Each structure stands twice: as C-alpha cells, then as structure tokens.
Length: 217
Image 1 (tube, rainbow, N blue to C red):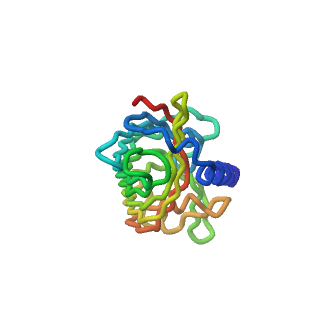
Image 2 (image 1 turned 135 degrees about the horizontal axis):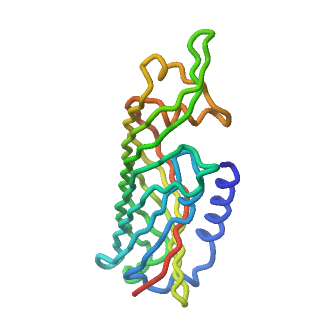
Image 3 (image 1 turned 60 degrees about the vertical axis):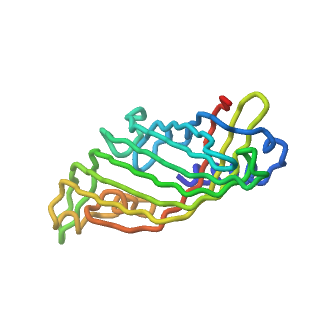
C-alpha cells in the first residue's frame, strides 16, 4: 500500500507541475481509464472507465462507470467481490476559456455499491476465533478537486488530480452485534475495522490519482 501511495505522489508531482506544452491542445471529447483501480486493494479490485466531454467554453463533464472483478484471487482481499462504482465530475478549466485542457478545479460525486466475503479474527474475553462473513456497503462521496489534464499530439491524455471532501458509508455485515464490536485489528493499522465493521460512518475523503486516455476530438 505504501508503495502505491509513493508512486501516485511522484506521478502527480511530475505531471501537475510540468511544462505548459501539452496544455495548448483542446480536449472536447476523450475516453479515460483509471489504471490504479486494477491493483489489489483492501476494498477490492475494479475496472473503471469514463468519458469526458465539453459542455461550453471552459466547462466539461466527466462520467465514469466501474465494475468489481476477482482477478487477483490469490492475493486480493476481500474475496468474491461484486458491485459497481460511478462518478460524475463537473470540471472548470483555468485557461483562456477556449481550450478544455490544462489546470482545472472540479466537483466530483462518487457512488459505490459492494458485496464481498471477509475473514477476520474475533476476540470475546479469552475466546478468539476466525470468522468468515458477508459484507455489504454503500458509499457516497463529494470531493472538491484540483488537477491538470495534458493532451499530447498523438492523442494521449493524462489527467492527474488531488482532492478533499466528505465520505458517507453505510455497512452491513453477517456478524452478530457482539462480534462486530470485538473484531481484532489486522496488521498494517487495522484496515479491516475501517472497511468491514457494520454501521453508518462519516469520514473526510481524500483523492489522489491519475487517469490515462485518448483524445477523440
């Protein structure tokens, strides 16, 4: 996980502050994918792709759909993941009002529905045991983002971004109330409690990543 974060930070730093050369090509229509979503994460592996299209002047809309897969069966956690994600993002480019490329501000709405099987250790008094159980969650996040979309002459699009917002999550699981309260933290700061515990939660939301795509028009 730390390696992924370092990679994202280095990539973001390189492209967000790079030269202006690739900001002069207009982007009226492009398709993009999020390559990091395919990596095995605590919340599962997904394939995500979207389309960005110009609305008017320096305003664009980005729509994305994603689907959870079970490609890395040996190393991925959790198991038997099913579900989808969707994003709607309104972008305002800070250029000359004509070209929809370069630096931008945006507001993004993210929605996710997910079902999977989790395995955790439960500790009730002196009794400890492992439990396999189902988890179902619905997530919504509203994020204010700053980014930079670069378009190259041969059609390559790279969109790097950073953002902060609010995240709402409702989680149900197959544990009893007592088991849910006595879940033992796993290694690496106990992400299992954060991802699998039942309840309604409100968190700050942080976004850092990039998209790769192709300019159609």
